Image 1 (tube, rainbow, N blue to C red):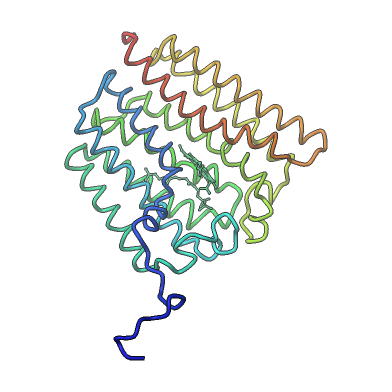
Image 2 (tube, rainbow, N blue to C red):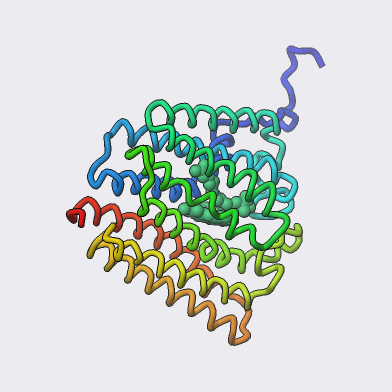
Length: 309
Ligand code: HEM
Ligand SMILES: CC(C)=CCC/C(C)=C/CC/C(C)=C/COP(=O)(O)OP(=O)(O)O
């Protein structure tokens, strides 16, 4: 074939577009992570933070968490290829090669760190890097394929975004910031195991030791119940430390109450010997995300509207 002849359409190699690169950053998951960063900035400021800082931290926060997603997809491309939910990722289909993906993820992380350092605070940059390393090294590389504790310990990665926001505003981390960290820490198993119950066969096939695969549905729903209780107890504790007041207390109690109801329904269903059905697991999985989003809004509203005790 001479160079002047067109290449047949079915043989033109697909070229990755910016949308494919964007998909490597797991945009939907990041939306909630970023929500915890932004609301934490309002909490730290007890008002509206500097607009420029808000923009920079949102952008850098997205880039850092996105970069973590990119490296997760590079490391996991072998198992992602075998699961229906993840088989279409550009790293598994070969649309984006490992070197290109790593260059993209590396650039995002370096830029994000520099942005947070220069326009935020060094502590914010370190917190963001800590979240990145916890997700990529601790969760993806060390724990995910080796132990069912992967979610609890590796879940610490998702607890860093509020610390990034808080540290960007104050340059420091106080007790309340660590409460935000702890709330997400205990919330993550509820969020993930509710989903894992529904997709455990995929995890079983690729040999990932998620809790329902290793110890079955009964222990999983019991653990979900326990972690839901920890989450709710922990979420009301900042009230007793006078970090937040009545607005937050009412919201945390109401939102937490419903988290317990949905966890209890799932527990009762499975303990009665019935197979996990989407109608009991999906509501808890979906509500877990609404719970966290609204709890953080309530904390921000409370600290903005009520005087500090
Ligand atoms: C070890 C920790 C975590 C694990 C293993 C985990 C796992 C998952 C998985 C497998 C999904 C299914 C959707 C998909 O294919 O992307 C999902 C959805 C989601 N997760 Fe998590 N998650 C974790 C922590 C978090 C944290 C800390 C947040 C935010 C604070 C979060 C926010 C979300 C959101 C918003 C979705 C819905 C995305 C969609 O609808 O596509 N997750 N999670
Ligand atoms: C501050 C900072 C940089 C934080 C980063 C933390 C982060 C990106 C948390 C996300 C948690 C998550 C999507 C886990 C799913 O991984 P998985 O491998 O189990 O899911 P998958 O099968 O969909 O890939």
